Amino acid sequence: MFWRGRLVTAVDGTILCCPDTPANLTRFSKGGSGSGNGGTGYPMVRVLALIACGTRTIIDAVFGTDRTGEIGYAHQLLRSTRTGIIVLADRNFAAAAWITALTATGADLLVRVKNHRRLPVCRALPDGSFVSRIGRVEVRVITAQVTITTSVSARTETYRLVTTVLDAAVPAVEIVELYHQRWEIETAFAELKATSMGGRVLRSRTPAGVTQEIYALLITYQALRIAISDTTLNHADIDPDRGSFTVARHAARDQLIAAAGVIADTVIDLVGTIGHHILDQLLPARRVRTNPRVVKRAISKYVTSSAKNRHRGPSHPATITIEIQATLTTQPPA
Image (cartoon, rainbow, N blue to C red; front, top):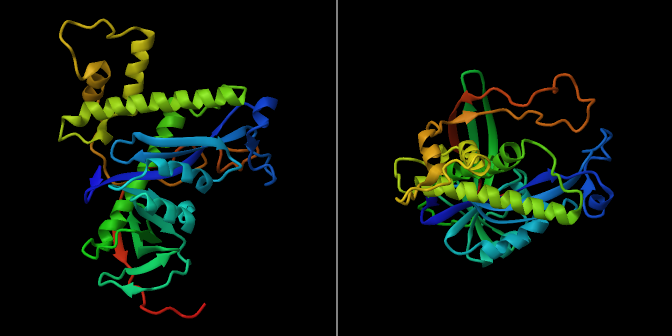
């Protein structure tokens, strides 16, 4: 997916759990043990990835102990950023040092910041946004009210976004709409953790084994995502979103276990067995939906009854309305 000549990417982190062994505990730690609910029960591994939003393929990934935060690993991903891409990120990545380092690679940025973060108004723009600075980086600040309306409810949330795209000819509303693509990385993590792993804990009982297993997971995920991308590449009317990761995974599994489609004919099939399964079972075109957050896996068996067994909430078709909030050209003293 390209936006105004830039490859749209997203950066974010997730947590994988590994077996509770003495060896793993020498490198990885349990989380939440000080919260009074028993902790996670398993040592945790933090994974940080940079993905292409259009295809959900992995551009780069790093992982290690969760004692290091996301922003600590994010600097390692700068080796894969360059001119011609834009990186979407959540509020954890709104640190001045990382923003400065990222823009130094030539990449553009679109990141959410806290609503109360004080940013100097250097000059106002006609659409209500304004130009400011974070460290040495000149940025454009956009404040918008986003309303999501469904058949059962409506909710409004204020988003404050910062971008290095300073061209006033680019509408603020368009930039806010672009930020929605950041959720593609959440879908990628769901495919990695829920579809590929089935929500299970990693199997390896040593740090070296954990490293090997995570690389195997990432490589397998990437191979399937590339298969989906290659299959839809020559079909301009088919969005890669419609290629089912689950279908691709099952087709690949059958080829390995049952040797399905292994013996090739004399005619070379560029789509391949996996590709044919994908095209035969395309997902419907994506529609705007909203799904409330629920407890996916309780960190204690003593969770409240209202949270038990709530693995997935109802999904509702939604309408999204964006209203840009004009910013005053002057701000009150701190």
